[in-house]
Length: 263
Image 1 (tube, rainbow, N blue to C red):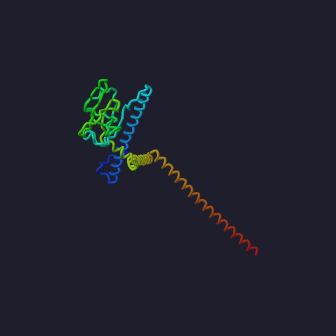
Image 2 (spheres, helix red, strand yellow):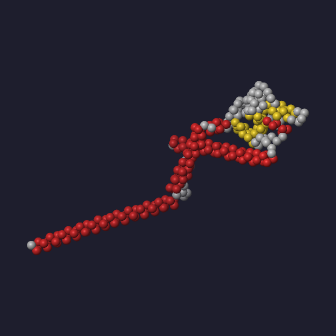
Image 3 (cartoon, rainbow, N blue to C red):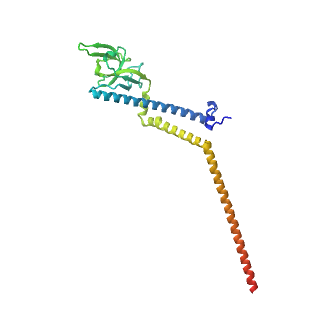
């Protein structure tokens, strides 16, 4: 016969047969777990991104060269690239080594020189590429949702990189985590909940451990023996006191009898 623990038996119970409280507990635990692992994954990716960029920038400084980060991530805040890139999508870009690697139709992120958005980081699609007599590349860009092309052409030195991937709506996490309430709801509460649940599981496991049960049983038996011994000693003491009293009474009685004789 297979001996299963209580928690193992509980996992075999169909979800539909669980009580409302158990169903709610499982759903909340599942949601918190997904959120925690998602945040953890994002944090790991960001950490790796920082390490890669740090090593790359360190190498560039040794060579005396200034370049944009090797890999960057940006949250889209305007609808100029809708429907291909939406507001609060996150894009990941990679630095381009050679301007000839940028083709018409590529989406690039750059430091805009347009008078309408000068100095702003913009992500638009390349519509036209021109090459000057001195070999410099000029890129004409346009937002997919815009009616007109950007007023100024971008030089290669203003380009941060070419878009590699779009992560839909991931910017919502950044937006939520930037607030205290969001930080508490997405980080603190799930962390405390998962840690608390794990602590309860550990306590239950320890209680259900056969070795601990034997030890506890042994302790209880020792305690019971001590109590029995204490009761026996108490009874002996009471019996002893009774005997002393009885003996004292006899002595008093004999003393009185002797006195009467003398009289």
